[in-house]
Image (cartoon, rainbow, N blue to C red; front, side, top):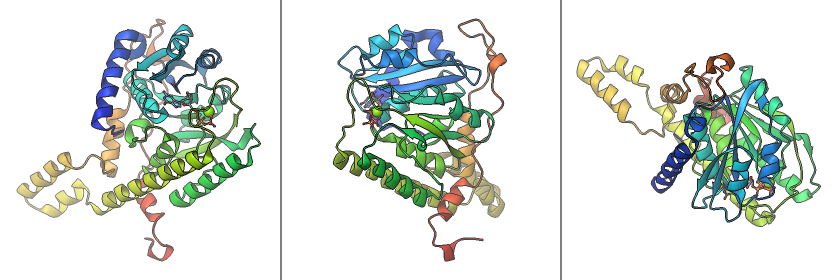
Length: 357
Ligand SMILES: Nc1nc2c(ncn2[C@@H]2O[C@H](COP(=O)(O)OP(=O)(O)OP(=O)(O)O)[C@@H](O)[C@H]2O)c(=O)[nH]1
Ligand SMILES: [Mg+2]
């Protein structure tokens, strides 16, 4: 469901094959937690960032996947030297495309959970525990850090205002209270990333967040810290006249897309309903075949369940590279997306008087 465009998909496929060839079993048999980092020209920064990452989070072993794309410096080499699994894509596409590929590698490698962070050292690795804990406890499927609940070093009033404005906008659009929609450190069940549409090449934070809410996953925020970048420069620029409108475009575009997908899904009778109404064997067969060929982008609740089942990593109990049994630190069975999420999302757009009771 992450739906890269066909050209992007072939780049992803080639990069995933190269990753598998380079990393072998290390890439195929990941520990329960994959820490995914997109890095672009982060020489001098990526090394210390990886070095500071914890070997375990909440008692679960971690592996770090760094997706580098089109960097012209030693980012990939430095990440390898620090022991990360590196996917080095020859063309530069953007942080969003890099993260989407990183999520895929994490899922295909059998990780149960994904934690994201940036290569610029702005996030505190110690916060990973606080973000992953509610996911492990089964209280949330997706947890994002929040500088508004935690702390931020920047005093830049425009940046602070930007976070507030987008947080308010997303909260109003989705009906889910969000205080920080662009925080780069998050923790989630790995299959969540396979159940949402991720098409944004660069500003993916809002697309992921709105998509996850729209598909009925349980979202939470926890206090976290964001520091100033100390090495290198922002890849997105400090010009809020560029950053702001682009981020706004992703917010509105994703909301619009998800709203239509949700509305389509709530209008369509489920295959089970159609079978009940059909009353004849021929009609039943037609209903079933229509379901299997239906637009894969329509998130019917049964489809979401199927996607979650397909994407759900199967605990194999196989040996890890370090010789330990995978079953030992296997987390508890993950819950599926909350039923009724799509319906709630649609309702949040309806005028109060039109809301279903
Ligand atoms: N692979 C890849 N990573 C990228 C690209 N652009 C940015 N990144 C990475 O994404 C992360 C965030 O990028 P930053 O430039 O720090 O942007 P930001 O944190 O959203 O915004 P700032 O507040 O300006 O730092 C860093 O780890 C970057 O190296 C890209 O085109 N490709
Ligand atoms: Mg940054």
